Image (cartoon, rainbow, N blue to C red; front, side):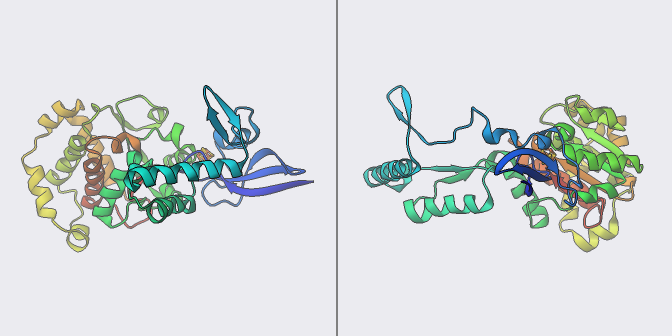
Length: 327
Ligand code: SF4
C-alpha cells in the first residue's frame, strides 16, 4: 500500500511542503505537496531528495557508548541511564554550572523548549544556548529593537508583490531556492533586483545592479543609500512622522557623511550607490532580503538596524511587497 504523508522539508528556512511516499511502512520517496502555501507544489533538488538520509548506511540508528578506542552499541535504555548518571555525578561533584547545554535549529520548538527546561529545572543552570546565537542573534536584537519582533516582517509569498528587491548578504538561489523563486516571479512582473554581495553568486545573473562592496562595509553602504535618499528628498515623510521615532538623530548621523567617503570605505562607486538608492526608493513597494552575510559579523546588529532604518526611511514597511526579511 502506498501512502503520502505530509511534512516539512528539513533543509532550509523556506519550509517547503513535502509529501513523503511511504510504501508498506518504508519511506521510498519525496514529492511536492501541491496545496502547500509556501512551495505551491514545487521543491528544489534538496527537497526532492530529503528522504534519502532516513535509511542511509552512514546514519546512526542506535546509541553508541565509547569503550577505549571503539564504540559499543547499546540499547536506548542503557544510553539514557548512562547519560543521566554521568550528568548527575558531574552536577553533584562540581555544581550545576559545571554543565552546559547546546541546542539547534534542527530541533523542533518543543524539543528546544524541553532542553532549556531540562537545563534550568532539572540540572539548575542557565548555561543553555542555541546555534541561532551565531546565525540570527543579531536579527533578534536588531529587528526586535526596530519593530518589536525579530522575524521576517512580511511573508514569503509577499515578495511577489515587490517592485524593488534589495538583497544583501544572501546567496538566495543556493541557500533558499524556493524563496528565490518568488524573487524571479517578482522580476517577471517588472521588479528591479539590487544585489549587495562581495561575491558573484547565482542570483547575480538576474540582478539589475550588483554592488560588490568590501566585506564588513554593509553599514556604510546602506548609510550611503540613505544619505542619497535624504539629500534628494525621496524619504516618506508621512510614514516617518506617523510611524517612527528619533528620525532627527538618524538625519544628524547621516548629515556629516559624503558619498565620496563611502565610496572609499565600501569600494562601490558613487554612481552605483545612487542608482541603488533610486531603484529601492522609487519602486512602489520595495523589500529587503538578507541572510548570514550581514548577520555573522561583529557589527551584525548594526547591519540589521541599518536595513530596518532604510525600510522605515522610505515607508517600505507594513504593506505587501515591502519589509525587512531575514532568511
Ligand atoms: S527551498 Fe529546497 S531546501 Fe529549502 S525548504 Fe524548500 S525544498 Fe527544502
